[in-house]
Length: 100
Image (cartoon, rainbow, N blue to C red; front, side):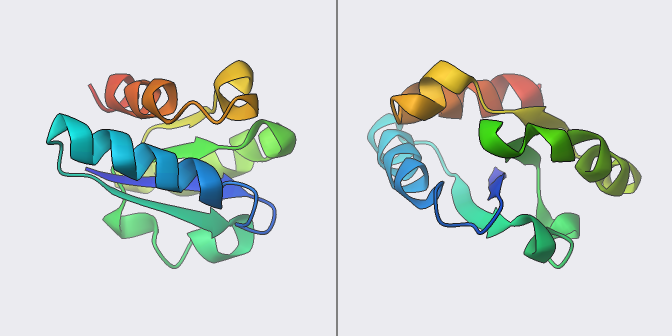
């Protein structure tokens, strides 16, 4: 599964990406998880299975959803509590649920 985490510069989600990768590895899940700035997301759109948006840029959801629709890629906002506590397991679970 290819998961993109989106924030304004792609920086604030990088620690969360590391935690999610570790959880996926521990669970034996094959997951490609990367953080992108919103401006770079369109370069990767056709390869993604799930797009999760950082709560601080939740206002981008409609715009990103519109870009993701032709690819059938689900989009959601990362749970704010999970984001704030950098809970990689919870956010990975959110991505898995979104993919179903």
